[in-house]
Image 1 (cartoon, one colour):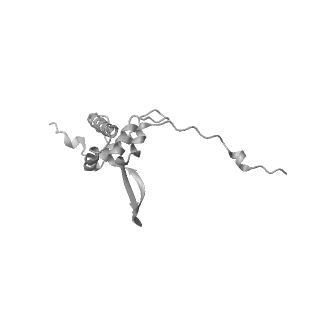
Image 2 (image 1 turned 30 degrees about the vertical axis):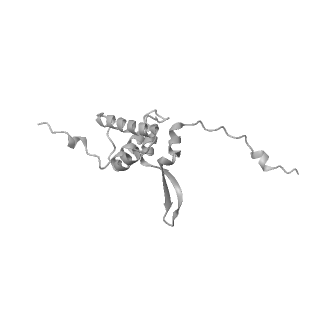
Image 3 (image 1 turned 135 degrees about the horizontal axis):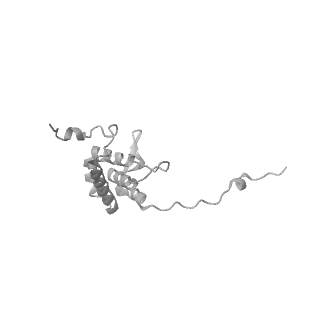
Length: 144
């Protein structure tokens, strides 16, 4: 009986590196991060999360994606961006001043695209995502 080293059987060549995507590098900047700690150890930071303005910029980078199965647009990114703008506008404004150029540009473009979609008759935020959004029917005057 011959003993075979299992590492030789399972060893594979190193994988190719993922292509670099500058849109996702913006979250690595400490200016765009929020450090979070847990209640059990409040002085020991555990997570670094993207702040609100960076999250909006990341959502803008995802605008225009389509589903591979039916090639329909993915609207979830627009809904998430709308929810972010409508719930934490003060944080977005405060963080906008400190953000990098790319994050500021993407955030402005996200708000611009959302405003253009809001006036488009066929697009309306879903009620379950945007319960606080006013209805267009109630905002328009009634014709008599």
